[in-house]
Image (tube, rainbow, N blue to C red):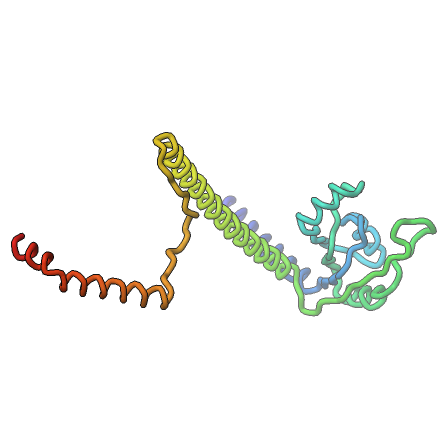
Length: 230
């Protein structure tokens, strides 16, 4: 009996927790920041916006990997940079008011601070929930992985073709060396060169020449006799 009561109590607690979580998600609101000032980290965004209301989750999108590599290579800044971000407020009314109040306004702060003169660019996303963002991020990651697989496949095919051409060139060069040793001429042909098609004038000239040779052979009595003999 005690175990059954304990199991029943656990199920009721799970239902209550799920209900409370769902209600919290419905009350929450998300704002979108289209530009993150250079060098600003997620903790700084949470600190600055947390002054206006309770914040749940914060997600900032890092810059492109190639751009980050070039920046670290040619500049002195080594910390990751972010391009855009999403901030979840636990109250959607606060999220809406914060976006309307801070959009296109200076970040501010004490005189001499790094981002004092930077501008907030943010917008409230109505009916947008955090799980939508996670699905979008997962989808974009899957697309990125698919593109990488295609690029790797193309690179592998190009590399294999290059190796085949190198091997063919080595074989042809070896044959040419043997011919030169024997005193014979050997002309290397370009790889995968299409055969040259004769022009119309050359074809007509060749046909006339062959026809004339046939007529000459028919007119020659000696050829006729030999043909009859053999």
